[in-house]
Length: 138
Ligand SMILES: [Zn+2]
Ligand SMILES: [Zn+2]
Image (cartoon, rainbow, N blue to C red):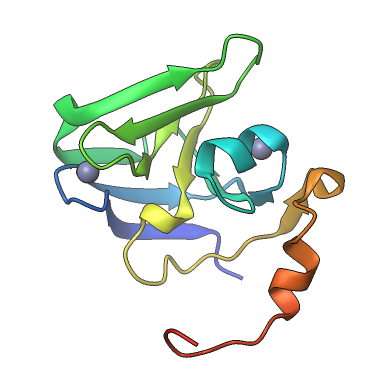
């Protein structure tokens, strides 16, 4: 399995914020913790971890807002002020760049290695992954 991001482009939904990431991946977690579920509004966060210097912002840096959860040691979130999409951010200790995998275009060439905070997963998650699959709307 590849552990390298090779100049992968990413953006928010509205397209104001764009960036490129590259370099070695140290982890790729699907995180089911309550904070990640709440902040994404979805079943889990899909976070790729790499070194802080492995990002080049191409546009829209002035549109990026950051939220640091007061009662958490490392949890933070960055998002586009215009469309709300999650964006890469450097964690609070400054040791890692955390890239929401859904912000990347196409196949990043790396895959998740685990599901963390599994016991906090949404009550409806297990049934969701078993549910009927449709190419578009069912
Ligand atoms: Zn946006
Ligand atoms: Zn989490």
